[in-house]
Image (cartoon, rainbow, N blue to C red; front, side, top):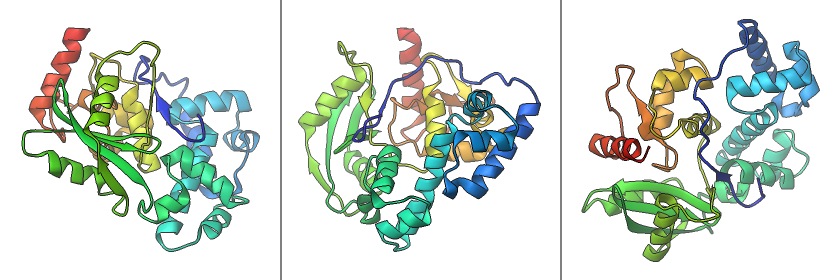
Length: 294
């Protein structure tokens, strides 16, 4: 990952990983407990794997399978979440860096770029100084509303006729101090990049804003192959526990980048098409479109 963009491509791996043994559960809970208490010390792989009673290589593989993130990335996520809370509460960038165990503001800057694609100062100011490009363009599923941040696509919504302004306001609410400029031509270009295969383009830069928990759920959505559907419980089992289905549903519903992050592939446990932010008819159309393409 570069220091200026976040990129992703949709993988085709199976959704729910195979667990190696029931003993892994106890080991992973021990590791997560250790991280929750010691993340600000930024322990290395050997220290965390020792808490789980596994070799570093084996621990890295099992931990990533269980959580969807490497131990290092989990520490980054915990650091980012704590620092963001401190900044929102009024702490300076230097104080937030030191409080979260980082040696300098430059290291905190790297964490924020990796996690949110914005700097700590931009996050603290509500987007003051940021310039977003916003526009509408035709898509296979009606009018698409695109919000493009300086470092990549930030949001993609769909709107029925007359609802475009409301959809855009929903997308820009997170950064109330940012400036938004209309650029329908740029939106049309992004529509082409999203919905039409272009030679040599295998991933798209994304400026994805969200809590560590939500991004973990969104990464799980990316692992659902086109033409397949899963339940909220399936996602919950992958990222945490089946008991977290309701929290998973909230994170799926907060997905800012429709279609690319395929929340439309998640159904209720009884197979019903429920809970799609841009309308159940559009969700049904997306699934039919993918089935036909497959």
